[in-house]
Image (cartoon, rainbow, N blue to C red; front, side, top):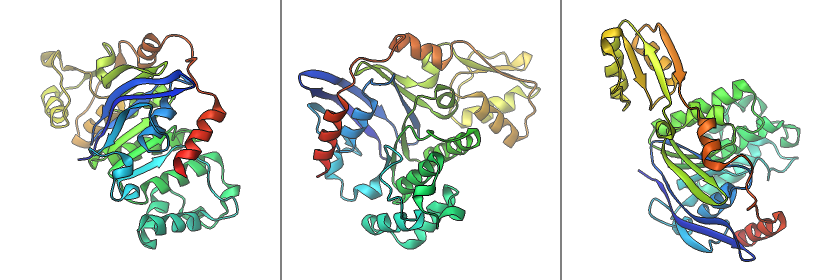
Amino acid sequence: MTAIEVRGLTKSYGGRRVVDAVTFTAPAGRVTGFLGPNGAGKTTTLRMALGLLRPTGGEALIGGRHYGQLAAPRRTVGALLEATGFHPGRSARDHLRILARLTGVGAARVEEVLARVELSGDARRRVGGYSLGMRQRLGLAAALLGDPDVLVLDEPANGLDPAGMAWLRGLLREQAAAGRCVLVSSHVLSEVAQTVDHVVIISRGRTRFEGALGELGDRAVVVRTPEPERLRRALAEQGHETGDSDLDAGTLRVRSAGAEEIGRLAAGAGIPLFRLSEEGASLEEAFLRLTGSGPSEDRPPAATESASASAATR
């Protein structure tokens, strides 16, 4: 099982720290939400983890190794940092075929990932004619190409419509259920709340919170069912606790799973539900409490970061 471990990761520009001793773990088999205001240091942290920027201090390990030490990095880590870098005159299929040769996978895998991101019907089209959402899907296809143990995705929901977001949610949960480590940076908190198991929040370059989604506050899903014991057992099999529930009244309170996941689990088990509602502090409320009301002022000059990233890849 491959996890991402970030330990004291620090980055300074001109004596100003934009990432300040950030520490967290993104475990395997979980979707970890990496959250923070604009300019909080999220993208800089991800770039350092992927070897695109050299840290001023600290380290980021993937399966116990620095990215540059991985024997087959493209087969270990799939990354989507921005939906750009595609040749506008090249088709999606040709773009992925070139990446497949660099990754060491066959052409059959190209067709598999095109189908997985629902681009098979548009695979011959030039990428220059793609919408932002389609480019996001192509970027996800590229990240999945090497069948990696780790996915690092920066704002993968950009450009997706509601149906696309629901599709992405299912994809990420599927990848985590297969044992992969999925680290997702996002500003769409309502979507994050339905997708992630684990949360890391940073602000002004520092870690403000790390833990299970349910630990952010007294957030719970209240469920009422005529078969509370069956539902309790079904939830327990998925690692969800219902400690303060009233089984005699048919009511369960669940803090480690969202309403959508519980509803899907109950439907799969054939358990009827009379009530399914969320109560308590929301992820958005917890986020604002931990980060303050405004964006960070610690964003590095764009030109400086771009130049540093370019130098790191040469």
